[in-house]
Length: 284
Image (cartoon, rainbow, N blue to C red):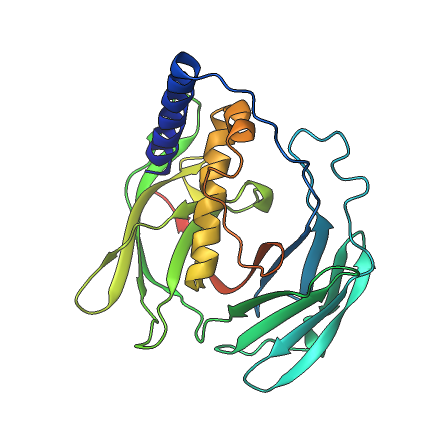
């Protein structure tokens, strides 16, 4: 489904370019791109640390990508708006600020405010919530493995879990899986177009890949608020276009493709989530 959406945007954009070239050719003077602070941080109770990355933005195609963009003189506070207490994250290295979570444990269900002060810039702020409950899979069903031309094995899988949304707070979900022993760097998140039953049980259907016919698989379930869900959807779309080798299109239409930011007075994303995992030995 994500591939279809990305392809639709690519085709539409290419058609627009064709129309412009045929009907109207105008030289447009583009303004100089001024760097702005970019803040990124994902917070979860299952992590050992609290961490924020702060950098300057730079134009696509710049030759000076990661050499001088780190912001090393920022001041960053994490504020629990329920308990009304706060902590300052300390500089670690190259634009990264943080603390061990044991010094300031995250409170589930709480609303947090991140405040970032960069010299000679407006105060950057963002808000996030830690879901009030970690979600576990209730059941995982899988089908028979089928050998693929590449030599890998694929099988259908259906995953079930209980929706933990409340009348005042709706939560969103992402699912993922990986063969045990494989690097987490290759963990691919699936956009969960799930079905909700009358008993508030959710389920989603997809296929999984493994290197052998019988394999130990780790199934992940992320629960998050809508801001994290929107950010992941935007990231997945851009990733799809890059994988399709439409990098030139991505560069040309920067700002037209959906990009998600929830940082006031700057760019970037800050969010909260919980994640659980279930390990199953799948076999025929």
